[in-house]
Every structure is written in C-alpha cells, then in structure tokens.
Length: 269
Length: 269
Ligand SMILES: [Zn+2]
Image (cartoon, rainbow over all chains, first blue to last red; front, side, top):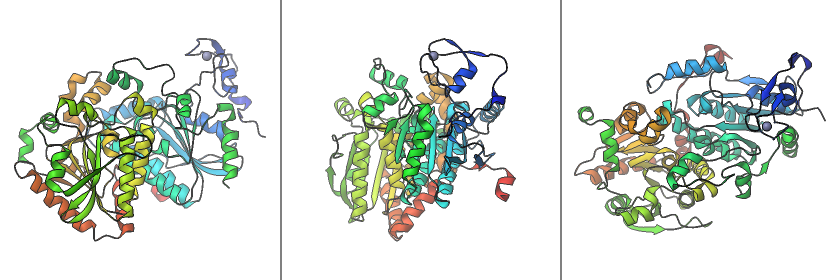
C-alpha cells in the first residue's frame, strides 16, 4: 500500500524546529510530529489539521481539485464590525471562509470531500459553509460520487443570525437528497464538532467516524455545567463516550484513517 | 410597521417570554377540535416538553406538534421549561412520519428557550436527533406549517420548524440562540442582551423583511382568530399541491436561504 504520509523531502524544514505539545509540553521536532500524522508521539495529542494537511493525509498525490473557490460571506444583517472581522480572519488564515470543498482520489477512488477549518472564526457555520456543503452534496449526487465531510465547528456564525441557523436545514436537506439517491456519505467528526454542525450534516452520515478524544456535542460542556450546576465527569462528550452511547460507528486513529476510508469506499463501489 | 417604532426588540423578547402569554394548551384549545395527545418515542421514554397528537382543524384531520412550557412552577419543572430532549424530537418525528403515512397536514407550534443542554440529553444524542428531524422534515410529502408563538431559540426550535410556511406571532422571536447567550458569547457579558437584540434581527417583522418568515400574525384580542385565518388560508393553498410538489417546495424554500458572494469566474466555469 502507498505510504500515507507522503510528505516530500522539500517540505521538510532544513533547520530543526521544536514545537511544544499543548498537552504534555514535550518539546518535539516539527518533522517528527508531521511524520506521525500530527499526533504527539509522547502523549497522543491530536493536533488540529489544516484542510491542506488533512487532504494530504487522505488524498492520492496531486488528486485534489477545489470546487466553489472564492465564495464569501455577505453581511446580510448589516451586523456591526462583521466585515471587519471577516477581513481580519481572511488575512490571518488566507482562507475565504471556514471550509474547503473539492474532489480527491483515495486509492484511486474519486470522492467529493469537504474539510472544515477551525482557524477561520472557529469554523462556525454561516452561509458560505452551508452553501458550499449543499453544492458539494448536489455535485456528488450529479456525478455519482461518494461524499466525505471532515467536520469541525465551534457552532453557529453569530453575526449571521437566523441565516446561520437555516444552514442547518439547508445542508441536512441536501444530504438527505444525496443519500436517498443512493449516495454513500461518510462523516468524520474531529475536535471539536459542536452546535449547529453536529445537529445537522455531521450526524447524518451513513457511516460516522470520529477521531480519538474529539469533543463531539450539541451543547458545549460549559453551557451544560452552567445549566446543571455541577462539573461534568472526565471524558464526557468525547469520541469514546459517544461510541459507548451508540452515536458513532468507529473511532479511527489518524494513521489508519486513509486505509479505513479506503476499505469502506471499496465495499461500496 | 408604525408599532415597531415604539416597541424595541428587547421589549418583544420580554413579551415573547411573558408568563401570561398563551401556551400550547391554549392554542390547541382555541384552534383544534377533538385533540388527542399521543406519547413516547418508542425508544426510551415520553418527553413531556413536547406535545404531539392529532385533532381536527376546520374538520380536517391534522397532526399537531409543539413545545410545552407549562404555566405554574411545578409545570415548568415537569416540562423542563419547554426545552426538549432527544426523546421529544424523536417523538415529533415519529408522529410526522405517521402524518405522512395517513396524508395528514402537520402544524407545529414553536416556543422554546432551546434544546435541553443536559447530560442525559447529550448522552442520548441531542445532536443526532435534531439532525434527523431536519433531514426528514425537508422531504415530508404532506403540508407543514410552523408557527413561532413565543421564543424560537436555536436548533431546538428549528427541529420542528422545517415547514412550507413559517409564520410568526407579532411578539414572538426567532433566533440563533437566546440574546443572553449571544451577548455572552460575543461580548462575554450576558447583561448586554438588550443591546444584542438590536443587532440580532430576531423580531417577526425584521425576519419577514429578510425573507426568512412568510407572514406575521397580529396579536391582541383577536389573536386566536387571526391565527386561525392565516393557518386556514395557507393550509388550503398547500393542500392543493401534490405530495412531491410539497416536498420540493419546502426543499427549495430553505435551499435559497443565505445569499453569498460568488466570484464572476466561477459562474463562467
Ligand atoms: Zn504531547
């Protein structure tokens, strides 16, 4: 099988760069972390992945073609400072919004894929995220492709108000159409998948995968603690908890992600 | 609209939450004949935060589903202040599918501070339950009319709100989350809720202008009569549509919510 972490030598830094793990605080060489699928070799902390790193791990080399590039949010509510906030988020991240969609090949099988990006306003779901996912589902249906969503989100895009809420029904409806037409939809829940994203397309997968220890919930831990007036037990709303409660099909380690998805795809050809 | 000038959005929030405001029991009593409440999700339990059953509307058998807040403190506690759990959403879906089977129109009454952010609700799949409702409602082949009567907060409201016609009472609100929650997330200060209301666009008239709500129902002493008239008018129109047309109409309604900026070159591709 093809080596999954196909990082070319040119991408490696020439100088040793040490990164401090946010969990165990070990100082580890950036190249080692990269070769370990961006998982801390000391404590198994899962680093947040950019869509590009995620796609590099999943896609066959040079197979990615981006769809619906350049879609941008319109300030539909004339919300104060929203344009400014978007401009800053764009400048900082180099992204148009919190999702990248396109076509890739996984071990030669063509799939439609969307990857959310928490670096852009915590991957909150606004109209651009909703529209791109809906278009992706429509594209996948039209071209008879399996659909994969790599989910992550801090919740709703506050500045888009009810338009943000309506993206939940819009994406859910498009996914249902795709599934009813016979399409295979694999949803991968990564840290954190919360709020309106979890309560829409994230939990509609024919097959739902989760990354180890990912926080997956509708209401966030802080909101629940405020409501019930006590601390939540360790591990509550983590991927392992959801598996135990029957909410996800499998927890998949990053080093086995591509081969696992590939096996699923092959069984649905 | 002249009324709007004198009543601030935050006044509407207070009106929408007023303890003397009619509850679902009153709407059912005033609008439907021979209502029978049905119970349970057939999976785990009956969630009393949601009322669901069948009755006649102008001699037409209909399915009625709505949030129940209760009137007294004991009732508030028993009904969890109208904050539904996954079992409530699953009961709703069960009765919506039943309505579809027997070709009954569905009328939903929305009045909730939000889906319940509790431990059991999370463990039992709040996100998955809401997602399922959004997907399934989008494709129902019977008329669906939703009326926001009080608070329509977050995914907990939308979970019974994917309708062909979305109506709002004059003093109801419909929002991504409570103004307090909004202020707390955006400005770290829930006391700034009145200010949040000014920018959130949550009142019936504002949402009608934004194209997210179809009609605003005037209140006052003729409230029930006004509701009856509008529901009857809309239902008559919807009942003339074929089952497929109804589903398509609903899909298209939500599909176009949320305009985005698109670069010119995309459209030429
Ligand atoms: Zn570590």
